[in-house]
Image (cartoon, rainbow, N blue to C red; front, side, top):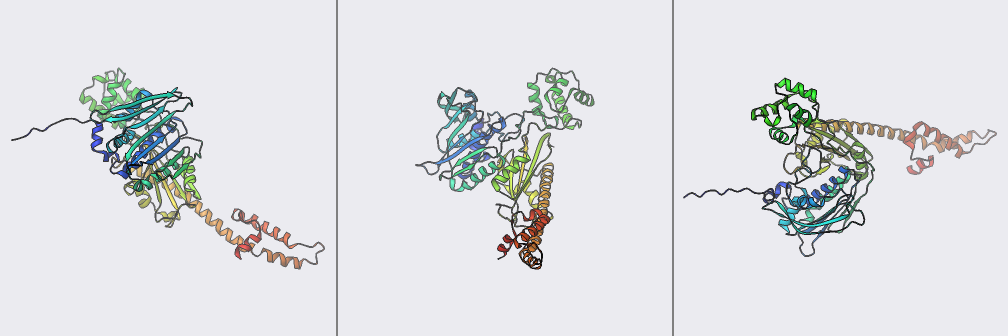
Length: 527
């Protein structure tokens, strides 16, 4: 006797409820780290992307009665969330303001919702959200859970009060199941690396052990905010094209091409249409299935479209990278480069590379690799990342006078609207040839700068050794010369002669003697 299969659909919330590992919530340690990461990234996107210098406060508290429960609070001074959007922003999976073509730290519309969902299924408590938009006269507070079956918010409590201080931003409190002892190192490293690429932010972190980490703002400039951009013809597929046509107000194909795509003006649209034999006056909504397929192939094939612009991206910038590396790692040398935009599957991408050497950096058997994608630190799956391949396999460090163990750190930042991650965890980037080439060229550029610095440093050290050899004999030479000069009507003092001889040597050897003020310093150091 056969039994009929039962069919039903499930909501996005139920899908991620059943498959929380996909979003990085595989175990209590990883989930605690992922929760902090998602909330901090939301806070930063609400600030620096809108021209606001971030003030971010993060705390994790251990529940007094349940050792496995941790309460995470993240507060920012960002643009806030309009009151009518707060429930959906935290209670409806795949509801987001990030579904536009511009660079953001998050992308999938999960973020805070997944933290709320994970807390709900492991601890059973609602999330608490407090928010106020800029110039809002009221501050709103919600307690929210998620209806998993229907993928919609359940508002348990709503309140408001007068905004007497003019505060704007968002504060999120969530209780989740976690394991601080195993997550501690990753969370501390995540916040440290976030501070490296956000030296314009104030970040304060309080751990469950009462440990406080403070990263103060050391830069008064922000990266350029990303601007929303139109799709590029080389980056569309059939479904995207259908969606664009359904939403366009253009009445003709030539208007549609010139109005809805970047890199396409009216003259170029006319040339494209004539090349492929399309009717310029047809309403795009009347295109047949075959016409749409032909149009997609033609858009990808036509080589005269201008390259995608990069104004929808927000690279960190070489100056901020150097400031961040100097502040956090305290090296003796830093350099950085922001490469020119390149194109991957019709999308612009920008690669940035920084290098730090010496100082407080601990010598290691291989370079310390700091990986970032859209300003997000990537801490897992390091050795499967394209940047690791470049740094450990493609680069011969001996050519740059680096002998391991060496105190060297390499920062690699990839920004784009289509990062080729290797998996859904978004922790490593695939070995895409154009990306590998850009990273390698960036690393070679900063490595050459380091090689020049080391050569100059070695030359100065050699000069200093020669100078010190001369200086240590100056007191004896001065005494000897005063003996021979006794017949001179004007007596010569040994101290004056010492000073004159020292000035001659110092003028000859310059900066290599900048820490030596007199010959006696050399004599005493040798003794």
